[in-house]
Length: 409
Image (cartoon, rainbow, N blue to C red):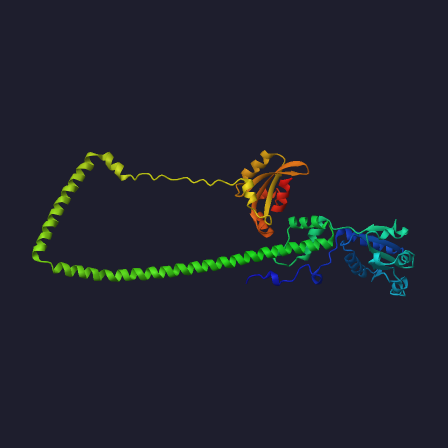
């Protein structure tokens, strides 16, 4: 049964999103737990899309499993007051309580000042966007930035989020690195970029599936056409064989009806023909015995001249101009020396591989491109078939639009 990826749910939807805890966040949670014993406060600033609300949710779940502290999460807005927040806390506080104040940047300045005042067994953890520390002078020496995702964090998050999904929806380390660079380590944009990559993979899969169905339909039609043609030929051959006995009977009747004079004349002609034939055979035998070289020459067929057709490989510029800028190619090698790039390209023995010159950061480099692919999925599949010595060069899937910009510099 064919897989129907379009019917599957979005793996990055809010209802299916996993809570991923990178190592940097684990360390921050550990520091918060130790500081909560002495009460006080800490402001954690984060860029928009850095996942501060997710961090607060994970912190709450982790501390609820810790018997040494309690945790409560509240969300504030411009009209929130200190009494409203404080009255939500448990009255009998035998253990320190970590109060996670989400969206602290929305709170009024007077409320932020109140939250810096010490309370027994209460530790305020304020989560706000970048710039919140500038509103209260006490925050200057008591605030930290929420760590962004590293490249490895991004890859591990995507692996966990896509666990159990079809193979064609999995993202490789190379694709994960591309997503991380585009998102600058912000979880919100990592999810957005990953959704786009998944959509492209699914679209490429559906296109391939449609092509396979059309290809199967074409083959079915061709087979039926051949079968019909064979049936018609069989009928024609059968009719021809049935008509042969009738023709032979007509010829026999004609021979029987001939007169005796005609029969004798035919016998004379036959005898004359046999005599001439015997003389010709005798002359031929004498000729063959007299000239053995001619016999050898006649027995060997004359050589048939063969025509060598050489298909010229198109130059890089001609090949590159014929490619769609929406398609992709695979960069297999890059070097500052043209000779090294040429030698690598010649050693590949791959069709559609070319060396081109590019200027990167004011440095001239010679790069080896291979192939043209409509989707990243096709390019990824092509890379998987390469030998290990080429994979060691870490092939890079690149859109033709980016290569065109690189060449034009």
